[in-house]
Image (cartoon, rainbow, N blue to C red; front, side, top):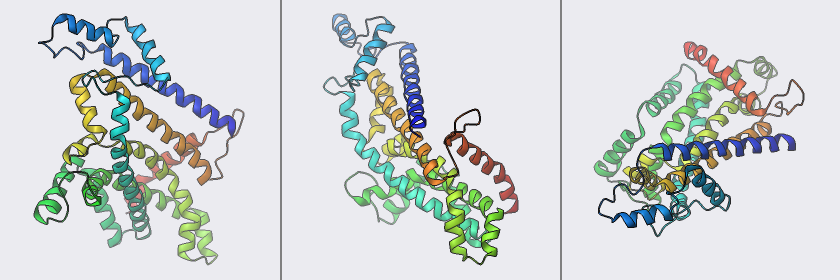
Length: 335
């Protein structure tokens, strides 16, 4: 187990280094620099600015300086807002994005799993159709359109909720729904397909033949195996939701990281783009690592073996997920 954890940590750091390197090279491959728009600034001052931010040095020197500062958890100063650093942006704005993302994740995971179970256990009945209609709407309608509709209906016409801002619980309801609806719909469809496959297994039929109650069969024998593919989806979705949706934050006027990330791209602020990308990558890689650990806790059959037949929890889950996906077509045809 310890060997497996260390191996996964090593792969995580390697992945993070690749992301840092590629992002750094792409940023510096684009023509121009962060001070190109400051046309009225005297050339001497521009030269001093480039020297201050090490932009006058060769690319490989800039790269190693950045890695050295990164090792000290220093993401560097903003090149547009001289009094602020990237660490300041993350410290001040990430809690808001994380708050919104966690609310959306909790809502989408709980409701998605419940809708998926209802649809699977009531297949080809009215509850199944209603759950799948909700899922199709959630997947088909883009978040920014859903956000606009929610504002028009619940804020303008019904006057039940505030249209924008981030002051109270009421202000968080509409952006949470708009941000989490896609994940909710995807989880519901994944849970339904996975549950349908598990309910058709021989051991479930045996459990029913032994006279176990439907609730006991569902939650003691079926749920644990059906939830594995959903955990995979939630692990990836969690990172996206916690970091926050740039568009949703802009529409609802939420002071999260999305606002500053968009501005940094427009301003070609290398430090903020690199810093937020690295921060996002750390969250995404951490979520993948947590998902790998959850596989082992959820399904004891997934073991860490040594030798030529070794399988990681991740590969096991991928096999399970692919198997479920292959059966989605069959499940849909049956429905």
